[in-house]
Length: 134
Image 1: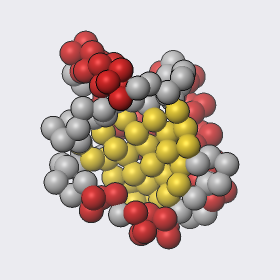
Image 2 (image 1 turned 135 degrees about the vertical axis):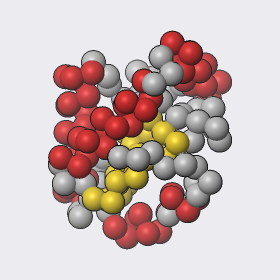
Image 3 (image 1 turned 90 degrees about the vertical axis):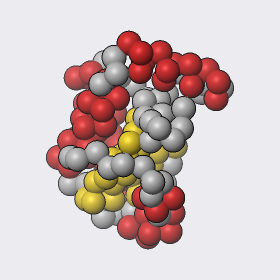
Image 4 (image 1 turned 180 degrees about the vertical axis):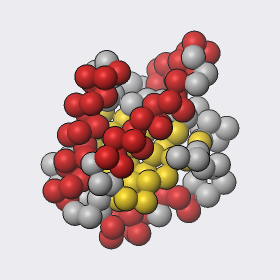
């Protein structure tokens, strides 16, 4: 899928919200489950629906190293395609593995190595977002 313009992205997410209001939460939980099974750590899902129009949840996790971050990305991509029929709209950082962003429109997964997570502190940046109980 080619990258969507911001207004197109918001339209897709808004339509999905109308069609199945719980789909994005299920996707966030599924992402967290797959990351956990692949030994991701400190998994957090932030509900940003009331804050932004371009996504519903940010799922943030730590991988011990770049190799594990890449393995988590590979597992997420494979399982979501196989089990849910979903492919990401875009992926960034999978070659370096220090911060892998996997964008499923409704949910965006961020897999960091520890020093990158500490540096960017997304949980602090989105501190007003409620956390989804995982």
